[in-house]
Amino acid sequence: MLDIAIIGAGPYGLSIAAYLRSLGLSFRIFGRLMDSWQSHMPKGMLLKSDGFASNIYDPEHSFTIKRFCADRGIVYSDNEIPVSLETFTAYGMAFKERLVPQLEDKLLVGLERVPKGFQLKLDDGEIVEAGRVVLAVGITHFQHIPANLAHLEPEFVTHSYRHRDLEPFRGRSVVILGGGASATDLAGLLRDVDVDVQLVARQSELKFHGKPQVGKPRSLWRRIRSPQSGLGPGWRSRFYANSASTFHLLPERLRLEIVRTHLGPSGGWFAKEKVVGRVPLLLGYSTENAHVHNGKVRLTARSANGSQREIITDHVITATGYKVDTQRLQFLSAEIRSKLETAGGSPVLSSTFESSVPGLYFVGIAAANSFGPGMRFAFGAGFTAERLRQALVKSVSRGRSFSSVPGMASAEKEEAGTL
Ligand SMILES: Cc1cc2nc3c(=O)[nH]c(=O)nc-3n(C[C@H](O)[C@H](O)[C@H](O)COP(=O)(O)OP(=O)(O)OC[C@H]3O[C@@H](n4cnc5c(N)ncnc54)[C@H](O)[C@@H]3O)c2cc1C
Picture 1: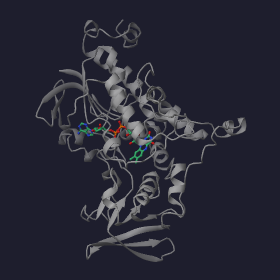
Picture 2: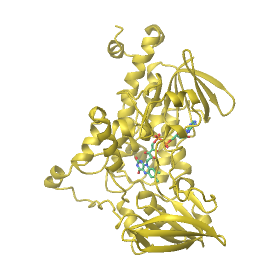
Picture 3: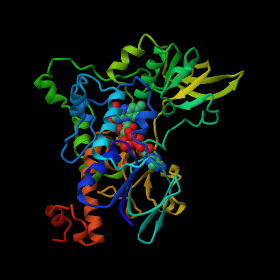
């Protein structure tokens, strides 16, 4: 029986593993290394998060992206030069080599409760038992395709999550649905490979982040009025970025509303010049229905004032984001899914990320409704790893004697209440 199993090898799973590593707890970590970044984001993409907010965390903060870039001779800036997808992915791989070498490239296909914890079934047939399970499965299972398009075959409609290499679209026509960063990134990158691309969005205008002024520090007044944070500038973002514990204390309805509305759709500043004036935009229109005729998709879109447009295209990509819904985690047994208390599809979590199923923890986007919008970004992994480290140490120490938890510092033993 392992103390802990971590499922997922993105920024959250890796950070949690790096925090647990030196504590002497028995744990294993499973998942495809940096899979969302390596296989499900378009080549050539730039990160919207600033360099200083794009770290994977270890307790000493010894291997930041800044350090990685310095080691590899990659140009880096805390907030003036965007981090490329390729750099961030390579950073995740180097982080794993250095701090999480025990990662196992296996997927969880079944999770059931057993008397002392959980039984995990892995995709190679191995069965593992663990007292606690941390689900760090990120965005993998939560792609959202609008209902009025979901009936079309993948040949005609796909989610943005499906696209890494855009070359297969060269010479074809594509409609992107959405007005956020995924939509604008994809539209600009498709245009780069000579795709006849058009962007359709509900918003009447596209929003982009402000361009940083290179080499010119922000004035004192701007820093006071709109302080920097891991979620971008502004007091509200700063609160949500730095006060996840306090956020957890807010009433549930308010938390859900904040997570739904804060940081609405907007592209990175660098996407603006790739899209505006290069990609035809149909703004203020929502798609009503779609069907395939003569090998083409025919979309009907309607504006708020009732005007209607028909768009004919080879393929539609829905850049319509991710919606957490625990029912979509098919590897959870029916018993676990039925026992999970949820709000708005997300698990209801304690102040230590534990769900209503004791010993089952959720992190990342699945924890955003509990701990705030920061959990949707790599930035939230630092808080999460630290909080979970404390919680898991306590939980494991309750379950067994300290002599078998050799790496645990005496301060932690004290905190865990057994010294
Ligand atoms: C287009 C796009 C751009 C983004 N840009 C940014 C950005 O600039 N900055 C930022 O901070 N965030 C960005 N994000 C958000 C990003 O997804 C999260 O920050 C980050 O991926 C969260 O990390 P994670 O570890 O929770 O999950 P993920 O990175 O999604 O990793 C999930 C992990 O879970 C594993 N997994 C899933 N199911 C199983 C299973 N059954 N068994 C075992 N393993 C499993 C996967 O193999 C993978 O290892 C972006 C997202 C998208 C879609």
